[in-house]
Image (cartoon, rainbow, N blue to C red):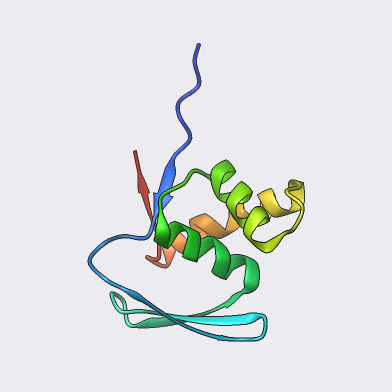
Length: 97
C-alpha cells in the first residue's frame, strides 16, 4: 500500500507578515490576526521560507538547514515537526494538498 503524500504548508494569501529583527531574534506581525510573535532564527527562517513557497516538512528542513548553514539532523526535524503545527494553530500557515 502506498503512503499518502506528506502535507504541504504555506503562508495563507490575504494577509501579510511584517518583519523586524535584532541579532538572532525576530518579531513578525500578522496583519490578518493583529498578533505579533517573537521567533528564534530557525523559526523565522522556516516561516520566511513558507512565505516564499509551499513545502512539506522534509523540504522545509532541507531549506532551513541550507539557508542557515546548519546540519540537517533529527533535532532540526523534530523542532520543525512541532513548530509547523504551532504556526498553523496561530494562523501563520495553512495546510495545502
